[in-house]
Length: 393
Length: 221
Image 1 (cartoon, each protein chain N blue to C red):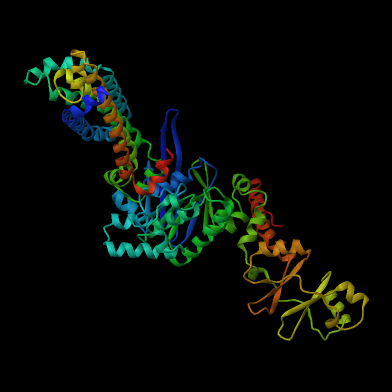
Image 2: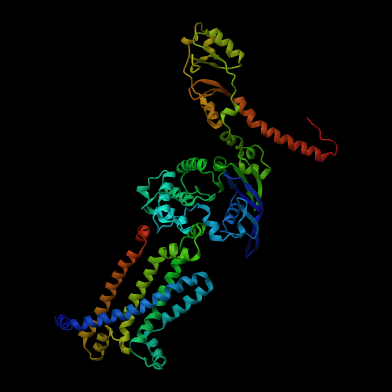
C-alpha cells in the first residue's frame, strides 16, 4: 500500500515559487496499479518522484505499507522501491546480468543468490538467460532494453514499484506487447504500483485506478470505468476526450451485458416457424440455427423465410460472427459495425450458444451512467436554486 | 646518408635520452593524472568553483615554458633545485592540469542525466554512483585528456633541456649551440616520432580501459 499525505513540492525558480504538487493525498491499495495521468507540467511526475525522494518533498508524508518513509535512509528507501524510467537508463558499462543484479548487490546478497535471481528474472520477462545475460545494453533493441529495465526494478522483489512513463519511448506495436506482458506478470507479482502516463488509453488499459492531475492538484481519483462514466468536471471531461464513451467499451466484458434470452431455430423447423420467431423476438433480419449441441451452425434470413417454403436446414447461410462471454465490448461493437448487425450470438468455451448481446444493451449500459451522473447534477443545481425540497423527476 | 650514419653512431645516446624523456614526461603526467582527475570530479559539484579552476588552469597553459622555467629558478633555488629535474617535472605537471581537469569535468558532467537518475533510483550512494557508473563512463574522455597532456608535454619537455633536465631536447639545444644540423634534426625528429608513438600507445590503452559495452558508442565518436 502506498499512502500520500498532503504531499507538496514547491520549486524556487527565478520567476518565483512554483507549486508543482499541491497537497496531494491519495492511497493505492496493495497489489493495485494506480496511473497518474495528466497534461505535461501537471505535477504527476513530481508526485511520483517524491515517493523515492528523487525529488525531495517540501512538506507532506509518504507511507509505504503503513510505515512513514521519512524516517528511512534515502538509499535504503530506494533499494526497496522498484524504479523504471522512460529513458530506461540501463548502465551501458555493465552487462545485462550486472544491470539486473545491481540492487541485490547493493543490498548485500551473496553471489550465488543474485546470479540465480538474474536467471529467474530473465525467465519472467521471457528472455533467454544464456543468450542475453553476458551481453551489453547497446546490443539490445529498445523493447528488450525496457524489459531488462523492468527486470532490474523487480530484481530485489520490492513491494512497491514506481514507473515513469515506462513504455513511452517504445514503438506502438512493441508497447502493446510489453503492456500485456507486464499485466500478466503483475497478476502473479501483485506489486503496488504508481505509474505515470500521459496516454489515456494506456491508463485505461493498465490502471486499477486513475488519478487525474492538473496544475499540481489531484482533480479526480477513480476507477477507470467510473472516471469515464462520471468525469468530475469540464477539465477531466475534455482531457478524456469526446470519445470517452467508446473507451469504456474496453473495460466491460460481454458477460456483464449479455442476455440469456435468444431466439433459435433448429434444422428441422420450417421457414414459417423461423419467420414467426424472428418477428416474436423482434429481430429485423435473421435468426440463428443451432444443432443438437446448441452450437450455431447457420442463420436464416428473414427475407428468405418470407418468400420461400421448406425447412431451415435447406435454406441457411453461414454464421457471420460469434463472440465469447470474456470478450470485451470493443470487440463486439467493432464486429457489429463490420457485419452490419444489431446483435451477436454469444457462445461458451465449447461453442454452445449461451445468449446474445445487442446494440441496444451496449448503448443502454454506456448511457445509463451518464444519465445517472447528469441527473445528479441537475438535482444538485435544483437544490441550490431553491431551498425547498429538491424536485424529483 | 651522413645523417643516417650519425643516427646509427649515436643510437645508444639516442636510446638513453629517449628513456630519460619518457620518464620525465611519464612521472609528471602521472602525478598530474593523480591530481587532475580528483580535481575534475570534485569541481562537478559546484559550477562557480569549476569555472575558476578551469580559468586558472587555462592561464597556466598560456605561460610560455621558457618563462615558467625562469620564474621557477629563483623560487626553487631556495631548496637548491633551481634547475634540472624538479622544475621540468613541475612545469609539465602544471601544463597537464588543463586537459586532464577539463576532460574529467566534461566527461562526468556529460553523463546522461537519465543514467544518473537511474543510479540514484536503484539506491546507489554518491560514491557508488561515481565508482560504478560515472567514472567508468567517463574513462574514454579522461584518457583522451591524458593523451593530449602527454603529447603536448613531450614538446615542452624538449625545451627543459635548457635548464639541464636532460631528455631529447639535449640534442636540439646542443645542435643549435654547436651549429650542428645533424644533432638538431635528429633531436627534432626523435621528439616528433616519440610523440606519435606514445599517442598511439595511449590510444590502445584507452580502448582497453573503455568499458566493453561502450565500445560501439566510443567507436562512433
